[in-house]
Structures are given as C-alpha cells and as structure tokens.
Image (cartoon, rainbow, N blue to C red):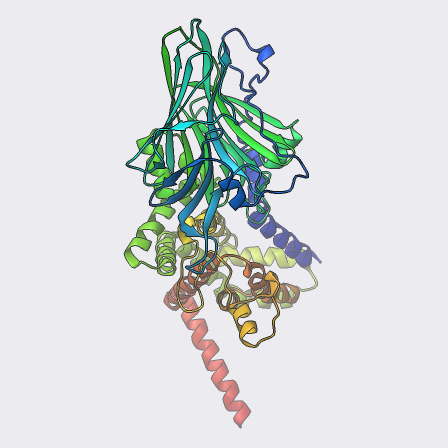
Length: 590
C-alpha cells in the first residue's frame, strides 16, 4: 500500500512539474501590477493631456465589408518594401492594409502572404492611426481626408500627409519606412491661428476580433501570451489578455516614460512606440469585439500663435523575427521589443540557446540539422550533470540484486525492510536520491528549449527531410498514410501518431530498460506504459520539438551505455547475466 501511495504521489508530482510550472512561477514571481493612470479629462490637472481617444467600434451585427470593396472605397497611397506591401487610407490617415511578403499563410509556395492589417469594417479589421488631441484646435479625425506629397511609401521615398483646418492650423504626418517592419511618423503641428493651442500627439492600434489562439495569461500546455502587451517604465507586462481588458470595465491604464504597447500574436506583432523620453499615458480598451491600444503624452504642449510643434512616434507592424526585434531594441533604444516573444521565466536560458540555434541554422541551412546540433550542444553542456545522474543509476542497478533479496526476506516486515535498505545504501555508498537532482536541474533547460521551438518564427514552414516539410507543425506522416490509402479520414490530433512520436516512445522505452527497474510490480506496469503515454501526449506538438526530444533520448542512451560499460560492478553483473542466459539456453537444448 505504501509503495502504491508513493507511486501515485510521484506521478502527480511529475505532472505538476511538467505542466504546473507556469502557474507556480506566476504565483511566486508575479509580474508587477500595472500602474493605473487617470483617463478622464475632468480628473486631470491643468495642462494634463486626456488619453481618452475613442475606440472606433463597428456595429455588433453589421455585415462585414469584403476586403476588395473596402480597399477601393477611398483614395490610397501604396506601401512597398522588401518585406511589406499594402496601402495607407487617406481618409483618416489609417495604415490599414499590410501583408507580409516573406511569410505565407500555408506551406505551399504559391499560397497567399500573411495579412496583418485590414481596413475598418472588414471581417478582421486591424489598423494604426496617428493623430492629435488638445484644446484650442480643430483636430483631424478618422474621417479627415489627407493630402499626400507622393503616391508610394518605400524605404527610399518617404511621404508626408497634410491637412489644414478652418483656423489656419496645419497638421502634417511625415511617414518613412525601413526595409523591415518599422514605420516612423514625424507629426508636426503649425499654429497659423491667432491664439495659442494646447496639443498632444497620440498613436493607436485598433483591431476587430482576436486570434483563435488568443489567451488571457497563458494555457496549461502552451503558456504563450497572445493579446495586449506592453513595456512600461522598462518592464515587460504580459498580465492582460483580451478577456481581462473586457472584464476590467473595458479598460486597462498605465503610465510610463517611453516604452511601447500593442497586440502580440504567436508570430506577429503590431505595436505603437512613443518618443522614449516622453512621459505617456498608455491604455488598452475594449468595446464589444473591438480592441484598442493607444498612447498619448501625459501633458499637453502649449504652441503659441505662429509657432510649430514636432513630435515623433513609431509603428512596428510585422513578424516577430528575433534578429530584427533585437536590432530595433539596440539601435533605436526601444526597450524589450524582443520580449514581444514570450520567452517565459527561463528567458536567460532561452535567449542564448536561440542565438546558438540561429547560428547553427546559418551554418547548416536546414533547421532540422540545426535542432540536432543544438541537442548535441545542450547534452554536452549538461554532461557533468548527466554523468552524476547516470552514475547514480549505475550504482542503483548494481545493488538491485541485493535489494531484491532484502525485499524477499523482509516482505512481511516493512519497517525492517526500510531499515535494511538504508543500511545497504550506506554500506554500498549509494544515494538513492542522487539521480533526482540532475533531473530537476534539467527542467529549466527543457522548458526554455520548449519555448524556443514553439515560438520561433524562424522555424515556421521550415523543412527537414522527406515528409517533414514544416517543423513548426506536428509530424504529418500518419495523416499522409491515411491519405495515400484513400480513406478520406482526417485523424484527430491526439491519435495522429507520426514517425517522430513513435520514435520518441521507443527511445523512452529503451532508456527505461537501461535504468534501475522498480521493485514493485504495479510500478513496473506504470513505468512500462509511460513511454507510450508520452507518445500520444507529444503527437500534437511541433515536429521540431519532437525531433529535439528524440535526439536527446538517443544521446542519453549512448551516454548511459558508455558509462555503464565503464562501471566495474555493472561490467561484472552484465557478464554474470550473459553467462546465466547462456547456461539457461544450454539447459533448454539439453
């Protein structure tokens, strides 16, 4: 009974470690709570800017406008870079039409590029806008029609949008774009009127709906933050999901000097970035199915008659390519832009390992080979720890015959059995818990690598060999076999057991054969089932992660066999076992 109770406890503890760590970490190491900022202009001190820029919400039951109709309904200027293509709506100066040329929706090379931004009123509307708020001005709004200085925004041809109101106040947005995903907006207000004006520039993102894999703080299996995210006062904040904002009276407010905020998807990011030296009020808002991220300086700037005021903002709209994000953080001084990738609590392990994987990909030109190379490097890095673990296992295997003898002798006297086992461990200088510590030390590395292989857009749609044409997707070999058989059946994810999950189960089973076997028969049965249970659990995961685990198991098996072959007691035991088997065969023939 005690053995069964201990077994149940061990299984539960293992499950908690594997799947419960994100929740343990969030409880004991919580992200600082957001600092609330005042949003109502009535509550602001004199000279303070209001951050209450209205959400542009579509009617709840409105029929979505076809994308083509929306793009043709107003005048536009084109956007074209090596990685982006689209247009800017001159009505409202909305950046609302962007596709990512280097990323496809499907694996097929002729599939459509990923669409990030879409015009207001369409099914998945998502756009950015720069504007002004203040007193003593008539500011442009989302219906204002702007005049462009050119008809195409490219890295070599910036475009300035301008509009003058009836008080001779001129507003200009000078837009420039680089070769990647960053748009810079230099906003100028020229006060041609006869009275001073109080003014503040704002930037906002608005999107209708949310991604299918959106979270409100992470899930038990993936723990990827997908939703509103920002960096406030030099601290990344992953606390708010779409549902969280909606349930918090439709609003979450922050104050910060610089930073950024926006919406992070698994692979894509839209973020508005204010001047990094300016104190700002930032806010996430929800109205129905429309979500908004907006930022505005905390105080208005007074602009005298005849004077002008300039301000700078940026918009990131693109893929979360680590090298690009890191370069922006370093070169433009945008804090933690590369943390739009939710590396988790083991970021200090994940980020260095990512760069090693990225370097290996450059060396081999194949992401599968890069994963294999990273696996070998990780196992070499962990060799001293693994050696202690395997040495402990070897000692436990060496004393197993004696333990079995004790179990037979004292099977009816549990206290005496425990006492005799402790005496044996002491005489043989064996620590039965020594093999546990290395396992615990390897858990952070496993979770860090799990994050890398799950989140890296660099692995998306990357082939390895033969049927493995997308390492970011599950192994498709089982489904491919069913397709070849002409069954027309689409397998559920948990039973679509491909070649890699099968290899994972087999290698786990081989590793168990090298480890000390449990004395209790029930434990033996449970451990015998565990490899095949993990095979089903891992089947829906990315093939890249499966490949890493299979390779890690193979290296572990090689390490164990090599270490066991060098252990003198085990060599003698293996020789005795071989002699006993040979004698048994001879007796059977006789």
